[in-house]
Amino acid sequence: MAVAPAYSEYTDEQKDIIAMVRQFADEQILPNAEHFDHEDEFPQDIVDQMKELGLFGVTIPEEYGGMGLDLTTYVMIVEELSRGWISISGIVNTHFIGSYLLMKFGTDEQKQKYLPQMATGECRAAFSLSEPEMGSDVQALKATAKKLDDGTYELNGQKMWVTNGLRSQIVFVLVRTDPKADPPYKGMSCFIAEKEPGVSENTGEYAGFIVPPPLKKMGYKGVESTELVFDGYKCPAENILGGEEAGLNRGFQQMMDALEVGRANVAARGVGIAQRALELALRYSQERKAFGKPIAQHQAIQFKLADMATQIEAARLLTRKAARLKDAGESSELEAGMAKLFASEAGRFCVEECFRIHGGYGYSKEYEIERLYRDAPLLLIGEGTSEIQRMVIGRKLLARNKI
Ligand SMILES: Cc1cc2nc3c(=O)[nH]c(=O)nc-3n(C[C@H](O)[C@H](O)[C@H](O)COP(=O)(O)OP(=O)(O)OC[C@H]3O[C@@H](n4cnc5c(N)ncnc54)[C@H](O)[C@@H]3O)c2cc1C
Image (cartoon, rainbow, N blue to C red; front, side, top):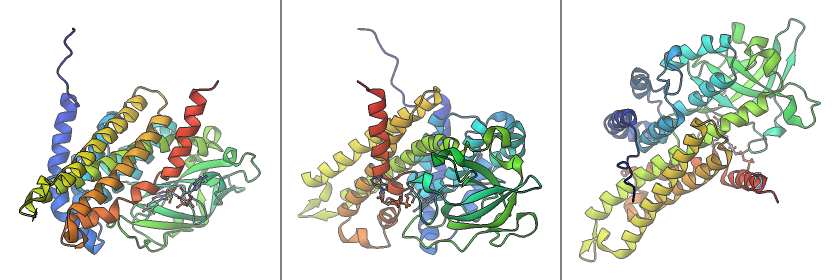
């Protein structure tokens, strides 16, 4: 039998980067996450260190000042950050989607203008599809952009649930540019809407861009989720993603493409939170005694640990496969949907099993699992719910297996 090379999950470069990010999570994120979570405070110090480590430019090409790494390495990094605290990965994630949109669809001018500042984290990005009356059904969006006589576009409407909505400097926002388009997706465009980071009522050139106070959430604290109100906000035509000629009414396809990498990204967050839940469960179950022995010696608890570890391995493999396909230039819509569905459900499952293993202490704010328990459900919703993933997977399966 032929001898295969020694099995390794990582290249040498990936090993070094992952070791660095894991150490960062162990030393900087995990010891501070409870404080920031309980106070619902933005983790500015951690974000400043992430800028220094270059974590805002992981996938941005070196020519623009980024690390130029692939999606596979990126999902490994996101797993480690999420193992620390999913809010930290949330600060990076919409930024990553924005840089992906620019790299894939942006004009040279748009890349030159934004990518170098994005690579350092100086300029951070948000991604805005959802509205108060629409999340899953993107074609039902209502916000509009209308061309004015001076050639600029006027944006009006309301957006919802925008992660990094306040502190971002640019928002990739999908709006309707041709209300008569049939089907509606053919009349939507993505604008790169600029504003003053950290400002609620923008004035001057950004007048009409309003960021209401952050939404109050069950978990996913520290990172803000906001509404956005566009009230006569003027955006130059050159801020249509890809330029007016190539980008007008192409926004829906651009955003759906970005959701494919976004789903691999959320899957990695599911793996990270599940991994942390397993670590906590392994430790607690060997410390806590019941009926004369550590609870880890009871078979029922061992079965929980076994199911958790197995789901995590499967979720990790699905996530990396989706990322590898995308890196290889192949469509990964099916695989990214499977990875997102399986890994987010694995995250919820593992967190709940860990909670059960903690008994009453799992319900106490003194234990880390309490935070994970509030954070994990978000992953079932963002970037498309589990129901929507099943629809994507089903549709793709049928398309690939037509009779
Ligand atoms: C903390 C947080 C951060 C977020 N960040 C962002 C962000 O940065 N940018 C952004 O654009 N959005 C963001 N979102 C929004 C998120 O993407 C949406 O909440 C999600 O897409 C679901 O949309 P919805 O809430 O409107 O639910 P709905 O679409 O109203 O769905 C409600 C329920 O109906 C189900 N459903 C809908 N359609 C079908 C169908 N055809 N068949 C079966 N079941 C169906 C859904 O699965 C769900 O269970 C965020 C959300 C949260 C909670």
